[in-house]
Length: 318
Image (cartoon, rainbow, N blue to C red; front, side, top):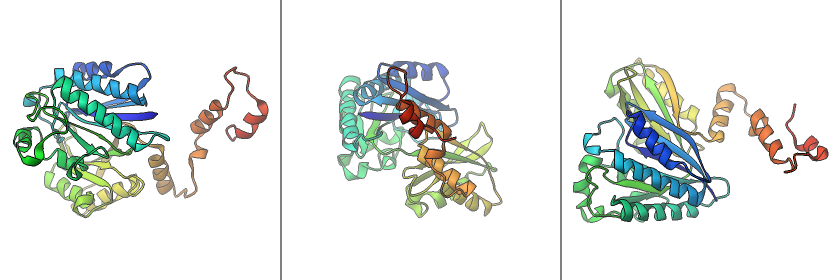
């Protein structure tokens, strides 16, 4: 079973800590695909992929390394967070069913709670309570409000102690489909403008389907940022989100100066962007040279002596 884990950690300013967490995650049958750190968000995203059980073990090691090195009582950043290891989602790849990733989330969550003493809230497809399907609701109040929230009748974690870890807080472990983390910088330092744009884009406030959006103060750029998660990039594409950000910003005389994709992105999202901006409505993955070469390579016999008849009909097109 092939899965991805896109773990988010509350550290983006100490390269040695980032490196230690990445190193802890390395292991057999797991590929570290990406580690993207951001100083303003004070956060980094670690993307792992491989065989499910191996990825689960890798994610646990990374969480343990973060718990040992990150003190949230001394942490300040622009991104919401409840834990040193803030979010650990498992994402099915290929033909892997979502139910398999739910099982991984449950087993890793139980280990984090019992072995590390950190409370765990299951979210997304792994949520055991309807209100916890939405990650934003799990993180409401952040680390600073976590102790009070956990004293409420509905605040009990799914695993681990009934109180936050004193320095590592809690962690949200879940299962979800692939998403796109997409940020747009605006030509303004006015937080109110960025907040108005984010509210116009955000699905929960009447904006675009499957889009989460927040205004972020990015001091290193000297500009405000609209930080987005496209949790359903097929319902709302990258171009649709970007064009609405541009249109709403223009109402205030503001432009989009730069964008970024954080971490890995599904090919389907990039194909949709190419189709939109190039007006190439029939452009498909079959026209991507590297994908054609990969498909051709998979057809080669293990002996290294290709069957010329098969490769001639299935190989890349010139």
